[in-house]
Image (cartoon, rainbow, N blue to C red; front, side, top):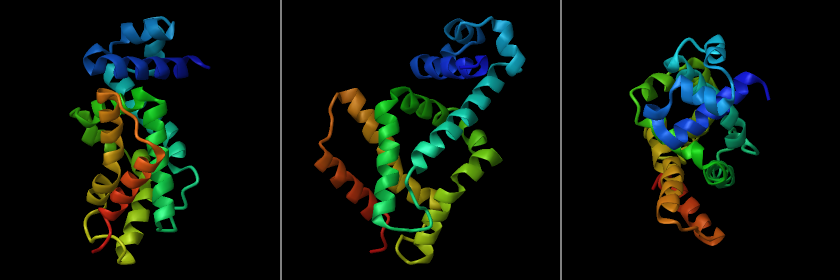
Length: 187
């Protein structure tokens, strides 16, 4: 693993454990086992590190989210695969959930979502929802609203599972997925 990857991994870990307030160049450098000056070779300051970390994380997670999903086919099966992929990320990588929550509640969150690279990465997912609306399958609401109704529950469920220490059976997960799907279907 190269130094920049080690820095990203360390920053991701620190962000998940301590939030933005605990993320400093010194703490990240120590965790990455590099000199603080090394970090400045890749990032101009803490904010640049945070911005690049977000992009890096999204671009790493994107293939995992979209694995096996055919976004040109709007169907329950494709939605189910997408939902399960997101769930697996949050279950297998608890820091991913913590980092997501940090970014979403940060003033940087909206700015980072406007990054053209991030928007391009998620364009096929947006298109999935747009096709569903065009086909009359999904409720005619903005795409972001449909995503909130159908996919944000994955993160919330993972968070509640961590906080309250419970696990759903596969049958229960399937019920939640069906409920998430039904939430966006045209009545």
